[in-house]
Length: 283
Image: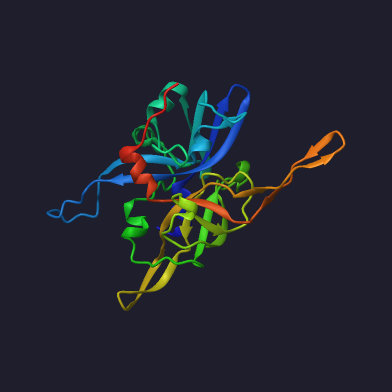
């Protein structure tokens, strides 16, 4: 599958409703695969579950610095109708959403997963023509890739910043950048690394991947992959912000905030950890 088609299949636009408040964000799909039967000559592997991955602050928006459970949560699949790509929205009620949502045991970790596998299967069984639905898997995790990752490596970030994207083709906005902190280290003690990439506001929940490589040296040999090989690095979670000392002007207080023009990315290894050991949220 071409890399462009993979981005079609793995990314989605998210929307939450809390009363009259509407928030949009980005997400992507991760497939938990079963073990391949070595006795069978087949490329088919059972998908044990499909999870929608996003930021915790997208899944549980904060209003007045308080985490709120949405009244409804909507994600989108792509369907083909009369040769046109259209969104197929899937909306969850609060109770159903809470039943499917998992977060990390450490509330600081800004990653959440939602179990959506059966919902996708329902659409397929109903005869809905879904467009190239795909998802990342454990094969795409850094520890399972032969591609090395180092500071300065090229990366791509794909998402739907504040609902801005190619509406006609339903394709996400893709931005480039580089790994800008030491790979494999927890930046300031958190399972986060930094990327040097000036992103649009509202890009939270976007998937971060290495730029596809078509030629690489692996185990001392020059290798070629016509579809491009990439690694799932993590989940984008906004920019570190520096808050300056307040400036007092008569009856007005001005607080200036500066950006470092880098982005926080939570390591991809958190996703299978949350799927296996994550916590549910109660009202």
